[in-house]
Length: 248
Image 1 (cartoon, rainbow, N blue to C red):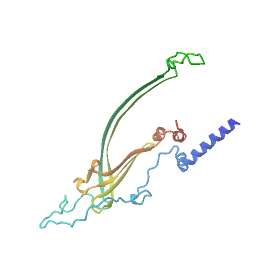
Image 2 (image 1 turned 60 degrees about the horizontal axis):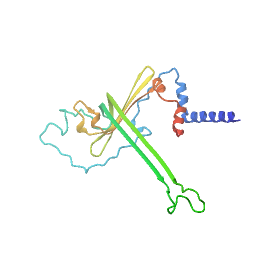
Image 3 (image 1 turned 90 degrees about the vertical axis):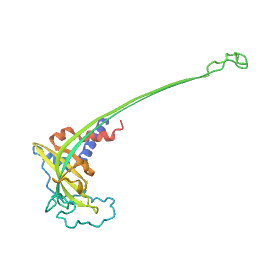
């Protein structure tokens, strides 16, 4: 009876995991032996998760013009500013990440307690009256020891250098540009994805229409992949469920 109950529980867990994966599992099964497809080029503003950016804005300032000048204010070309400045324009983001963090913590704690209490005599006599028994010399004795030794260390190093073209999706009231770019590269059966989004100042865009990732405010940079190699590196769905549910 117990074996039957365990079998039913195992089937229920497996069925529940299958429901959690849903269409994703069926889609992956249908792609066995096929290379992962590239996603279609889409308008970022029409995506389900897209939300316009709202930031604190300064008081609008009147536009200033330089009389008797052949150059426009902020322009770096004789006839036209080649840098991105309106919705739909493209600029190149130079992703240059080189982060390193080292943390080492150590804590040691030791505590020892001892309690000892007793009676040597009862009103000057070594024996109790009437009972004619010796006075107990030990009434209470207690000892306790505790020790704790904790160590922790983090040694992290990340480096990513690449370029990705981004599209201006929004112009904020103060003139700053909201940009978003996505790049997909497929090699054999593995797709590498690079996503860059954030807010840039037009003044930070260089003359060759590029900008360094360190000058992007509210930067969101994601680099990952999907395919056969990524599937092998990820734990199975059942293991992920157990990691969440098991308290130890």
